[in-house]
Image (cartoon, rainbow, N blue to C red; front, side):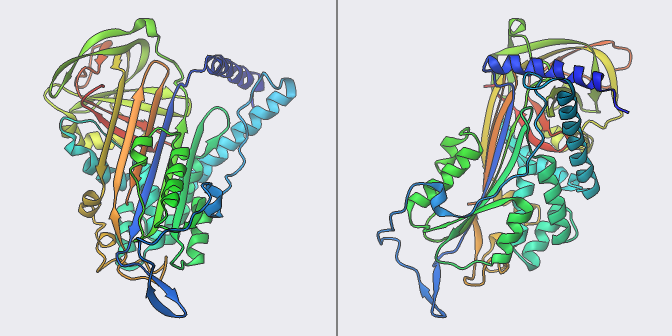
Length: 486
């Protein structure tokens, strides 16, 4: 039997803290990312009376359509209802106890459903994280593995033959049926909008009105990925504007400059976009009056940066042969800070199997010890933008980029020679005293060795390091290399 008084006391204490900070209009932590995939066909054609005819020239004046997203909607997804995080300002007594019980039971049910689905993404993470981060060299680089996983899963639904099998092999699943179950479990495990944690994965498909698409595939995407669908004239700038609007709305406007550069044109057959928005608070914020101005040793020279500082009397320190690491809890996830030992850099760690095992372990690590930790980390605002295409090809996904080999027949049989023409990934992450803010999109258009006797360690991130933001079920939402704190 549950000790409801203990549960209520814990929830009230946390809720008090949340309400106070919220009323100060402090955003503790926000993590957002989006993924955008473009599939285009040169020489696009249209079916008319059973005859394949050329579509109107792009120089023709496109029709004028209302500048509202709903004007293009075929269907718009509705997300599941979630139990609200109990608010003692709005309820008390038995009502509060009941609300606590309902909320906790729902959290347990979601985790149980995820565990029963048993998605195993470790091989995908172990191969893709080094692929997209190892060549950062002197720049900052951030990658959003779960988001790219969701985009690839949806891309697998639109392909067949070797095109699909290459994606399934990279993701590490046996069949498209298994992938649907696993991807749906990942979606639901990360979905929350309960007042404590906002974590929403959104997806959409943008269809060329001149091409017919397979309704059953679109229904599969709607059912398993909560995908909204829109259709319009790819030659009309207003349709591109609506795609940009959708991406900006679902990433909270954090990547506007990058998203505004995304464009569709008359040769675009379909665009697939996925986003995740994640917002949660640090469980313990940094105290601003403890900040120090310290030196950060970048690959290009020393810079002065504002470091946030805290002392942890008893906390876990993790280590490997080449790194040391600690974590900081978010109210709905964890942020890991991984510092290379002297003589190593982030690229060395990304090519080291032990470090990669740690990154995907979700904190399940044997080399750990409770210590007094003096932790100092710079505030940072890092961003990156890079192409995924070559990396995916090196990882074995090649056919979808080759219009002589690609197979998109599940999506449409009205056009041939379809291929992905663009695959761009952009991410931005910032941290300060109150938390972390991060966003990303994908457009497919000090530390020591093992501590033995030491009871205290100074963990100072004063040179290039790696960070990982994991969800409540332990999946890495963001993995980044910080070479420059600003």
